[in-house]
Image 1 (cartoon, rainbow, N blue to C red):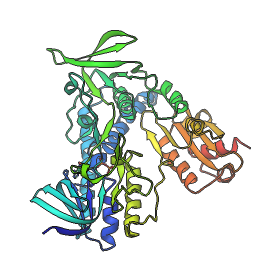
Image 2 (image 1 turned 60 degrees about the vertical axis):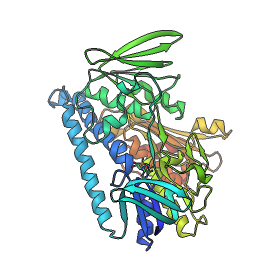
Image 3 (image 1 turned 90 degrees about the vertical axis):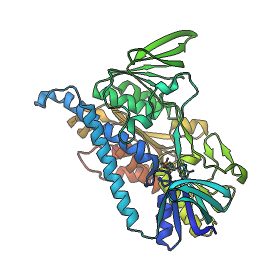
Length: 461
Ligand code: ADP
């Protein structure tokens, strides 16, 4: 007989485990299924956490280079094997923490295995103890996304973010010349880290702008600040990859109608991610478009008891968005599959963790223009910021966008120092419905970069 459960989650990443814990604590019978056999999905395995472990060490090398006149030991030769060891140690530390969190909720089971649908209430799990079938009152599909590898001849000669950031990664030496195919956030971040560590980086981008989908106004602020060892080549259509006898790589491409080639020690392919759909979904009438499983802000699919959270729905493919969506689904399950909570897909802080970083949230000018909305802009340049001056990171700015009339904060970007932190504080202000008046009268701390938020608001008065 099938095992009866209240909730089964397909995946145990950010879209899954917050709901699993929430419902288990409320007394529900909950099972999570994930082939990794551990929580936190691709974020910890090959995404946000390991890439930022590399980023922050790369940033240390940059600072060391910048402040040699203070007597810090001269660079160079960052030890990439040591960087990798640090990254792996961070991953292991967090896996141990998640194991302890799971052990603290004894009734919550995580099965190492792969789940597939039999029907809208039945899920088959092929796992460590053979096959098991579950009859589920509610299901959360949170099977995430994976690296998209296009059908290019020789694509297997390139590494992907999976190979760079997974535990015990494929790449353990710093390449002298790295070619990155793709100018999305993963490609651009990776370019930043390796340039900071000492590699020459050539980034090949198909269109005329890197970070497509981000506000071009913000991208134009960021691009000139990228490390001089990064060479951006736009309008490049990669056609194939080739290996030389010496183990190097040649990338063949077309640009302006002409064929050309570029040599590399290592090629990284970063042209996007694709949702991972569990087997058996086809027969259920669940709508899938090119972004993923179609859901509204209540996270329900066409079946009110089946939810799709996180990267698999393609709405906001970021870990923290997945966590919030997972909790929304949990609340709606607790409400009997009648919506009582809704996710906000617009006001999610998004940081491009290049060196320096760029971050945005909410409605920025490009989005406003497309929707025919007017905005009032407040501005603050880090050139005048005390902390930026102390750390000699005076490039970049804070830009706040307000609704005319009410001056309610509706969006922002931050390029430069502390961008990832500042966008969070700004996001809290948006969530709280604050206006330029509220921001202007808050005495934020001196000499910290956050005082620039108030100063940007006061630029209106
Ligand atoms: P999110 O943050 O959106 O939850 P992640 O990609 O971090 O996404 O995590 C999704 C997890 O789901 C991954 O660990 C992946 O291996 C797992 N997964 C993918 N397909 C299945 C499946 N059919 N059954 C169980 N787990 C799956």
